[in-house]
Length: 316
Image 1 (cartoon, helix red, strand yellow):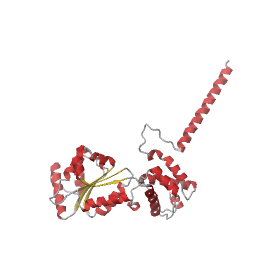
Image 2: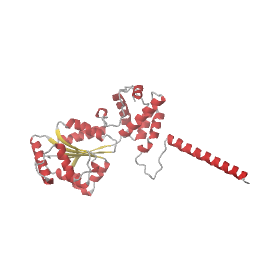
Image 3: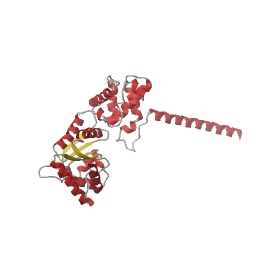
Image 4: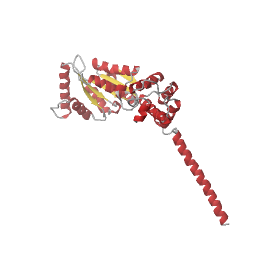
């Protein structure tokens, strides 16, 4: 790996898949989404919802947001939302270190309300953030709506931020959650990057990784956007493999050939709309392997026919 990075004058891999706030790319939508989360907390709006396709940068935004607010608020972060209403409430109280003096759900709710009122008296915000919120059971999502009823005459005692995939927005639009949907006053959506933003995204990450020059020519960058659809996580995957392809070929300036070679290897992962009924595209390596098998079968058939012919002549 060091040889690979040294070859391109990089201090570290600029396209690793782990969400790293240091490599945050402030596209217009990402800036708007982050400001929306800030607004929700600052103005105590109650409910906020952030949605986006997988790989569009929700987790990175969440980490940046938490780095700003963890010292300024009491935050319960729920990363595994497949919980019953009581399990969810217990997880929230555990994360906030709320002591429960009475047993049962009513006891937990009483302790939670006392906790919220105590922090409201000191103007300290309390928030619940649910990641992958599309996986919340319906009953637990309804429990969140009931928790949002905890308020005074002047303000909400609890801020709730839901972060999830587009299925979350679809669920909230259903008749069952009409009341909850009406309470969400702040919404933001992350969509894939445009072609221009994709080019800027790649160049920005290369600069942060230590390379101030351009490693991709313009045609390669546009091909990269065409292959990935502008989804940051997929851009990282293809760009990383493109760098490796260029390193193995000894090419310092990467072009369309290297991008296409990298894309061919992961094409099945780049188009989520392809269903099992559609024929999957084969990479060049798969095609070569299939061709080798076909040739071997053909040779075997010729040998078999020849052997049968010789055997017949010997026994006539």
